[in-house]
Length: 293
Image (cartoon, rainbow, N blue to C red; front, side, top):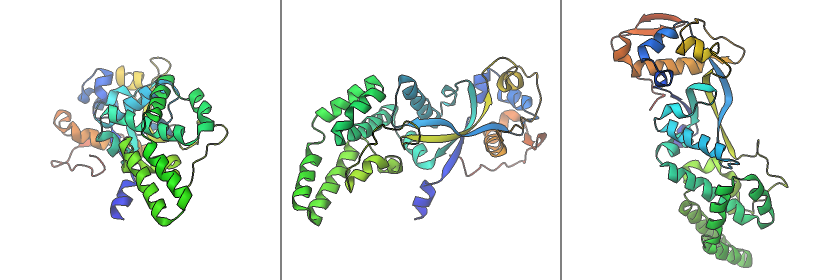
């Protein structure tokens, strides 16, 4: 239960090298954010999707995998992300898998959906990225599902605990074979339900709120319009000083990022930290925050 509770939590993963995106040193960045106390924040700033409708969505998945593995500066998309909050399960999965493994998981997930509802396949073919859909169809036609189809027929025929257990075991092994690790089972409810009863699509598969997207909160600065935006004027140019308190601002995402960033760059920052918008001496023996890996 303790492990389950731990895995169901979320964790802030800070961008330890955001100064590289600005083209300045960590010390210079630290100086330029002297007055900052908040970051802009959205609870669904980023999305990892199990149902990619375009190459752009696949690239966003790929950039989030890179971020989880320490390549922080690939995610930026008119917003510069200082801190991203991952569900522990998703973070551990992304951290411990290659991109090819992650992509294989998504393909496996979609192949189970495609296999399970033949009369809804046209919907998927219309909505899912074309290249991805080609891979999914190939998986379904490759014979991966023969074992589970046979076990399902036996279960329907006999309808007893033994045949049901055999069917469930066969289905579970299929998921593992397709790269769908138990670590991410909470995010693949649509196909796990098939172990107990046939999954059924709505007439139109919802792109929003359909359970296919994992929403990730994030703290960020805006970099959309021109050099007056937060990122350009405060960090890149260093021409503006303010605390960034806005209606969409959040203190937690900034504090958790700053604490980790200062500890990571302790030697370069030479004994200064940021406390409520003011610079003050670092303790001689800084302690790592247990929230960070």
